[in-house]
Amino acid sequence: MDTEEQARVALVTGGTAGLGLALVRALAAEGWHVVTDGRSEERITAAGLPPAVTVVPGDVTDDEHRAALVAAVEEEGRLDLLVHNASTLGPLPMRPLAEATVGDLQQVWRTNVGAPLVLTGALLPWLREAGGVVLSLSSDAAVQHYGTWGLYGASKAALDHVTLTYGAETGLAAYAVDPGDMRTAMHQDAFPGEDISDRPLPETVVPRLLRLLAERPASGRYRADEVEVGLG
Image 1 (cartoon, rainbow, N blue to C red):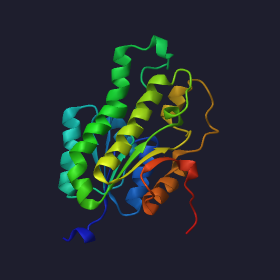
Image 2: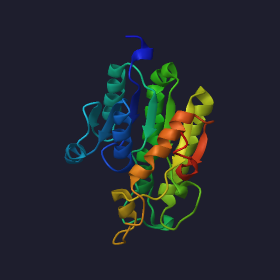
Image 3: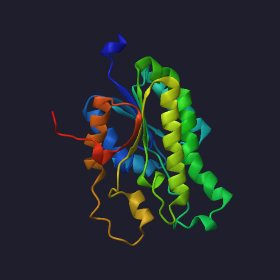
Image 4: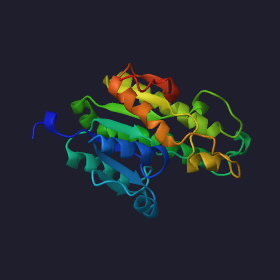
């Protein structure tokens, strides 16, 4: 089959919960073939993903798991979109930098920076062939300074840098997107015992991500709430 006739293919890490799950469902509904992963078989089952989604169980920090993700893309034969969504806050409860250890730093950076860096490199041949997009989910903590958010914020700042440097080096469209606060399990973990029901659901962010992908502006860092939707 000619590549122009093939369905578009996306790889979304951490696609069995939160924003990742909402994005995977939306892409599948638009006719994309989606490869995603999740660390928990229970969560994968509970996600109830559609048939157009290939789920590879495992953790992005694991070499063999990343190789399995690459193999899944190779089987699809193309890659139009790579979304780095899998993320960790680090040890809970979140603590000031003065209480952090080297082990804490390694845990956060392996997931939030190291895995996206090496996975992108491994998938560059398919992304280049398709003229694809690299999209990394960032945070306002990457540019603001909040108590106890230091390790996470530094890792997201580094992810922004890695993502946009890949764009500069390859010419691919590359976006680091701050989705804003959302009503997710991860956000609840950051605020234990607090009521976060006033935060928007992750599904409200997805149309803005899809709009960004459709418009293909210049590579850069964007806030989701800056992307206008419903304009045609």
